[in-house]
Image (cartoon, rainbow, N blue to C red; front, side):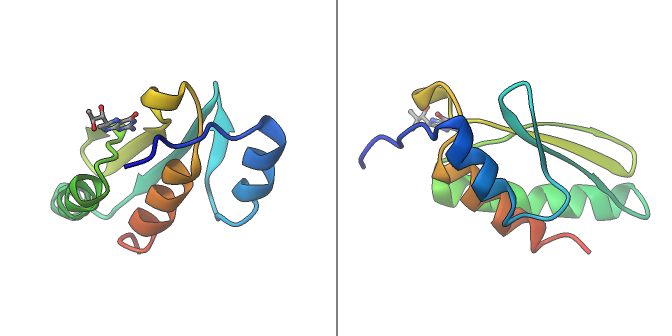
Length: 96
Ligand code: H2B
């Protein structure tokens, strides 16, 4: 598999416009998902984990009760790549 190419800040910014509710902070694509309860939050994480495995692209994330905070970057490329935006788009579809 070809190594992903790090996006320029300009390209990352225009890609960000295709996503709702995500921001770029500290060089990472970030979003907080809010659910009704822990079971819904953890179900989302289970689905997202399967997406991560299928893409071989894994999130930095944390969960407290009904919140899941997600931070994405591509360590192999030292920044944001198309993989981060693709993963963000896919897991956004798993949330209400
Ligand atoms: N996930 C993320 N977010 N960034 C990476 O660069 C990355 C990854 N690299 N998952 C993959 C795994 C790599 O370390 C393995 C060896 O394929």
